[in-house]
Length: 66
Image 1 (cartoon, rainbow, N blue to C red):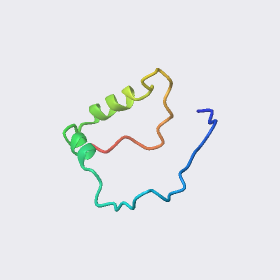
Image 2: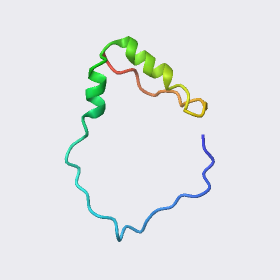
Image 3: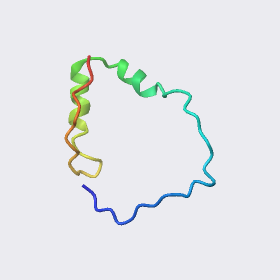
Image 4: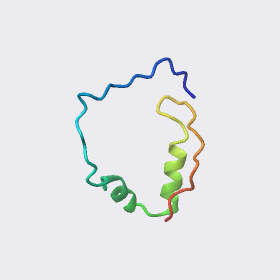
């Protein structure tokens, strides 16, 4: 949980238009090199805490299929 003090937004006048061409395949390609369940469990275990030691949120989706 976080304590939000301020949320800012731009007016959008100088924001350029962007078009989604495609999703980047880098993450999927990386995970396809490690299709085993053990690797997915290691990732889930490693990501239970943030880099500053705070507990992570409970995952709301199952582990990726092998």
